[in-house]
Amino acid sequence: MFTGIVESLGKIENIEKESGNIHFYLTCSFTSELKIDQSLAHNGVCLTVVDIKNNIYKVTAIQETLDKTNLQFWTIGDFVNLERCMPANGRFDGHIVQGHVDQTGTCDKVEDQNGSWKFWFSYDASKNNLTVEKGSICVNGTSLTVVDSDKGTFSVCIIPYTFENTVFKHIKVGTIVNLEFDIVGKYIAKMLNK
Image (cartoon, rainbow, N blue to C red; front, side, top):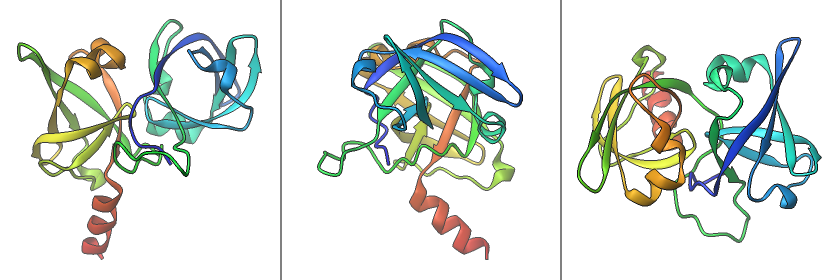
């Protein structure tokens, strides 16, 4: 389980395709602390560390992951948000994040609000995911509060710290992002649809 509080940025150093899988090789500030078989959220996608050599670690994305996330668009040199699993005795600063991306979304607008930024995103509403104003959303692994909410669209506001220390400084109009909707909202929506 994760909280959506980004711990560090990782840099993609190499990408290898093998059959239907893609292996990503990354560096980050805590590579030396990682262990093989450890779960690590990459832009909100829970991936398992499968190898560590020197200061580079390797994760593998299978077709199911590639189909539901933006990993297929990653390139060498890209930065990604990283979060290690929450320890059982740790603080719960964000919201419940599983690292299981529900779908991708697209950045439609970015507005500089003189000290903060407002981002608008759209997503395919036919997949029955939803947001509510002041509810939680996870965008590229970052736990955020929904500001505006409508069918298939929502906005979030980003404080300077989050802007500088996550991939939000790289998100522009047209950027495809990973979305994980609030787990409680997903259960309620499923029960109401039965």
